[in-house]
Length: 274
Image (cartoon, rainbow, N blue to C red; front, side, top):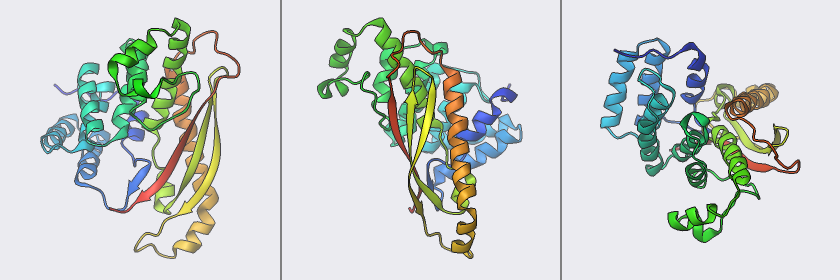
């Protein structure tokens, strides 16, 4: 018997299944397969979604591996099973998707899966980097499990709790941010810096360089993009706010965070030509 997605998680599902931050002009076979599965989930056809999921996994599409992890992570059309989600996320990461590592970090930091601060920190270092001066390890420990565990063994419980919190919030944001459809439609992107203040808690967004991408077949692109640039900027900022709000609600804030604590992450929305 298939398990239908709960209404409470449908907005998150639709966010996770939309365009990634690096949007392809021409979808890969794996992205097309994810699109087909998404349509069935949106329609409430879990049986059809699971059938397409099995086909995508058999074809070893990395995008479908990531989707499978998400479905088992959240219990969407399948029974929630974190251990199975871990396997799919790890495969997606090994196939070149940083979101796999980031969702592992976010999941291990989540209280409903432990939390496991050491695993969360380990996987966070494998995803797209964010910087927090209080949560780093020496370079020789970053890729050596034994040295990594030894380094963390000297940390206080307060530091572990703090870093688990920061990793959870930042990894949730980095793994869930998606290219707003309006921005992709007008082939507009750019850089944003997310500045996390854990003691508040609050995430501040600083806009960096904006970019326009040439897309073949775009009609009157310059004029349309000029008129829509402000709307596109608002859509990107709205997307970032929705994800950051969700991340802050996901993890309980530990006590005793120093008022001057911070973490930064640069995020880029771009069109990729393949």
